[in-house]
Image (cartoon, rainbow, N blue to C red; front, side, top):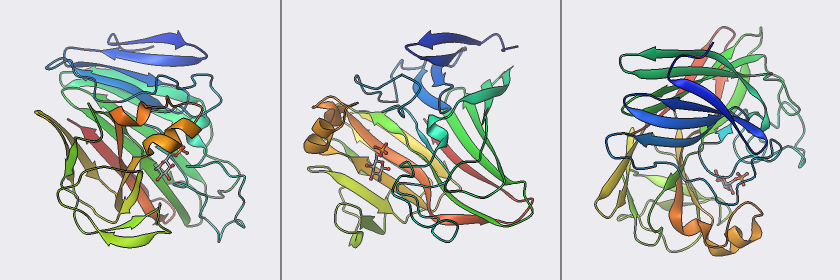
Length: 284
Ligand code: BG6
């Protein structure tokens, strides 16, 4: 039974959970527990970017919104568990899996939705884990990815809330709040200092080893604040034009109106039996 604020619709080939309460409206695809939309009623501004060419076929990962990366981030890195295998999917396998609704609950502060994947087992990962995504839609959108080690051995994983934010133009926005060094995925993971001001004029794919709790996207007068907790990195990505053209689920000019600011564990989290870890992103 869904709470009164929740309903389900079908979009192309996927089921979408709609949440509509006094504070906001939001949509979550059950394929991947993938947030597609969050619009607070205070300003009716859509916070997430969804590609106009996104595939909602229930096979390919959805381009835009908030993909969940788990149990690895980017290429498969858990080399001590299995030999590197180029066939492992980018960003793990839970973003292309069907998730179940565990609970929906309307409270005075909003609607809480708990989702869990059909299985956490997959090629490339041997841990015995339980995984849940707890989404709270209120004045803000809170996403908590909870990993619990339910096995008898230690487990290692990486993960990310890989949010795509809607912006007016990547060439004019800036980011505030990220400091320190970053590793540049477009330049063999070389280390550079985070620029200030932080602006964009080319393909950008950066792993910032930064645990800042707030990052702001400054887009003219509009500010989108992204809160993070439980992370070891913030990843900033924009594919720019050539990569956009090469992707089958992105319009050629799609890169202009999106920026990814990802709350991530890129260095590896190790959980002892019985331990849990929570990765949180809050979009204001
Ligand atoms: C980012 C990575 O997190 O995701 C990039 O740092 C990657 O390297 C991007 O290209 C998109 O990944 P995917 O698998 O969704 O195309």
